[in-house]
Every structure is written in structure tokens, then in C-alpha cells.
Image (cartoon, rainbow, N blue to C red; front, side, top):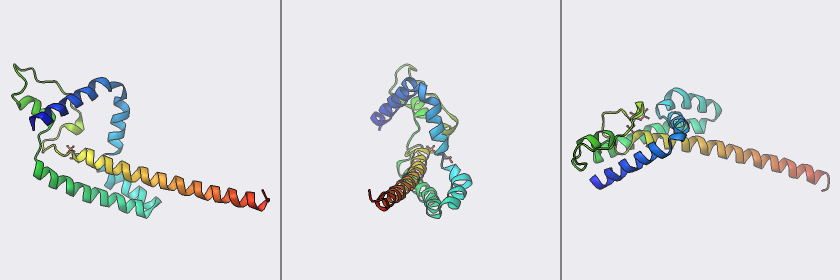
Length: 154
Ligand SMILES: O=P(O)(O)OC[C@H]1O[C@@H](O)[C@H](O)[C@@H](O)[C@@H]1O
């Protein structure tokens, strides 16, 4: 397990160091996808626009959170931010310094990440809804165009 945590820490360091320029973008994506927005914003909003998407949102929140809870009970994984302080694999207090953010300051088990699971589900539902809407609009447009061209005998 230490091998996994150590590599996870390396990936976090890589992202925090080499992708600093994308901080605002990544933080924005993470905040927009925050599952806590489902109940207060996305469900009421999407239910007005499209009941199927709104219902999907609620199912994503309920089923996704339930799965996350079960997986957390099974794995009961460390969070990298406290693992680097507690592990003995870094000699002489040379543990890496990881930057923390408000959403990472949680005290429960960290694996699998509820935020990562929830956000990816929220983004998946929203992106697929927008894509299918766009495709159906394009289909309607091309049918109209085809009929129009056919009517003119082109
Ligand atoms: O399991 P993780 O990654 O710490 O994420 C859990 C948190 O993820 C956040 O997105 C939710 O808004 C919180 O309610 C939740 O506690």
C-alpha cells in the first residue's frame, strides 16, 4: 500500500508544481462539479429544463454517495496529506510538502475520493445532456435544410 501512496504523492506533487498555471481552471471545474451543488442548484435547475436529466442528477447523488460510502468502509484509505506525516518511509523528516485546499481538509477516510467520484458523475450527466441536446438540434436543422433544399428541387 505504501507503494501506491508514494506514487500518489508523486502525482500530486507533479500536478501542484507543473500545472500551477491551470490552478484557476482546475479549481473552477472542481467547484462546479462539487456534488453538494446537486441538491441546491443542479437538481432544481435541470428538473425545470429537462425532467430526465434532473432525475439522473438525483440518482447520481444518491447512488454515487452510497457507493462511495461502501467503498470507504471497505478500503478505509489514508489521505495523502496525513499519510506523508505518519509514514516512516521518508527518512529524517524529509516528508514531501503537499498543498492543501478547503475541499481536501476532510477528516474521514480518503479512498476512494467522494469528491472525485461525485464530480465526475455530475460532469458526466451535464456534458452528456448538453451533447445529446446539441446533436438533436443539429439533426432537426439538417432535416429542415434537407426539406428546404428538396422543396426547391435542388
Ligand atoms: O472523499 P473526499 O474526496 O474527501 O470528498 C468528500 C467531500 O466531497 C465534496 O465534494 C462534498 O461536497 C463533501 O460533502 C464531501 O464530504
